[in-house]
Amino acid sequence: MTEFRYELLAQDGKARLGRIHTAHGVIDTPTFMPVGTAATVKGMLPENVADTGAQILLGNTYHLMLRPGAERIARLGGLHKFMNWDKPILTDSGGYQVMSLAKLRKITEEGVTFKSHIDGRKFNLTPERSMEIQHLLGSTITMAFDECTPFPATEKQAAESMRMSMRWAKRSKDAFVEREGYALYGIQQGSVFENLRRESSEKLAELDLPGHSVGGLAVGEGQQIMFDTLDFCVDMLPANKPRYLMGVGKPSDLVGAVMRGIDQFDCVLPTRSGRNAQAFTHRGTLNLKNGRHRDDDRPLDDQCNCPACTKYSRAYLHHLIKAGEILGAVLLTWHNLAYYQDLMRGMREAIAEGRMEAFARDFHAGQEGGDI
Ligand SMILES: CNc1nc2cc(C(N)=O)ccc2[nH]1
Image (cartoon, rainbow, N blue to C red; front, side, top):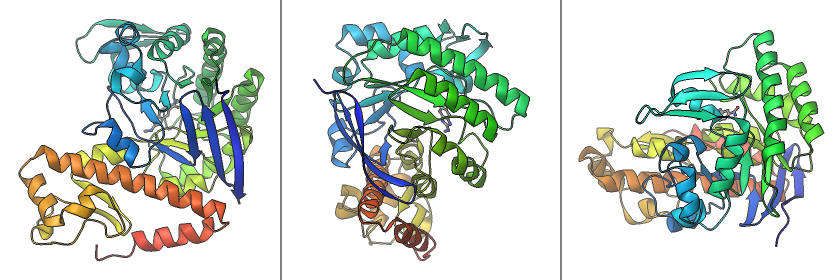
């Protein structure tokens, strides 16, 4: 069996090239994790997600506990078998989505009670139940049960929220079933307050966990405040363990966060915007709904080798979108995932060669290049 471990392979400024070894395979970092909310990356066959270069997916505890249910997935062999993905899966704890999706939520020290946004059934989510659900799913990387502190928050509100999350982190660790090659990550909170981020990091250090995430960001604070917070909070986490920034982000977020020491990312943007006709390219983003594409026989992105870019024209993609054809959403999702993986691979190569600053400059120049 493989023990869970992080290898730091190279550093360029704060940017890190690394490798995470898990029971389900290796993850080259910095890495982007496509979101597979309801046991599927929407519109994609798992083999095609793997072909884009993705080495790990994110699964959502909240959605899967409501439908089809964690016990049912366990009876059917676990989430990897259920969705035909044999590489690593990181599952979130459910806490964030309960707050953003569920109805009639009630938070106490014990945990959260809520009603399903699907059928109104009542549920209870505690650190212990979240660990049980993620274990039933067979998650490679389990996230501690926490509260994502809303933004903005006063220092007092952020302190109270963070301290509850740190108590829940201890309960999560106590309930987590240790398995070789599997890991529990702690989540740093503290909003934008340096002292609270430090207190959170010190509390997490006592638990000696194999990885950590920076929580409480990408919650409406904007890119500059996110970067300003990362400037001090990432270094508070152990350098010999992976650092995951939750819910991030658009391409320029990824470049800026890698340069501040982040190793793992997840975001619905490439898949959700692909279904909404938005394409990320090396020369900026464009929306295929726009009529200017109707006669354009150029490829979407001449630096991309995904099927959308090598087999079809912008005019065809525009036609599919205007006609509401499923293939339009499939091809743009496929492209956006391929673009995100190309971006991560480019950053890994740049860090390995000590040219991350130049990579970032070229990235921004390309994005503002115009005439896409
Ligand atoms: C999309 N933004 C985002 N921020 C997040 C924060 C957390 C968190 N646990 O603090 C989890 C998921 C998140 N997604």
